[in-house]
Length: 198
Image (cartoon, rainbow, N blue to C red; front, side, top):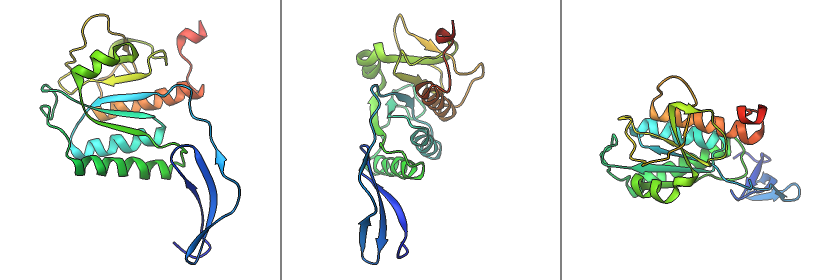
């Protein structure tokens, strides 16, 4: 960093302070600002595509403001249920942190890697909506939106709620990021659910 450069220093949990770099120390330029967290967190659950596409998805989900990113595993996914390594997880966490810094969000997203899909759906079912072109208009009544594997198969059982974000079939990472942007728009009141209009 250059001497005299100004930037914001944050703890990733809502506290941010303006600072300056003076030679060999960082000097506060004002009071610590505390941002309120969301009352309800929202998340995207996705089956993992290839390394490059997964990196892109995690980066963009962090940038649009998704709170929780669940990376699902199943024998029927593209990776055949193979877990991410510790090094790969660390790399994705760094990508999410750097993306959060770039967009100046005061809260870091939480990455949940190597989550077995069957267990996840069984334990979080009431919070989940599966993305499907035949689904209903999305809302934040369901706090976790699940993007299926490229095989299109999800073992979710009976009574599943499905949301539609497009009439088209997206790649996993595209669907995840579009869904994250929808969620952020709904949460900010920029996008309005039809149920609110009626």
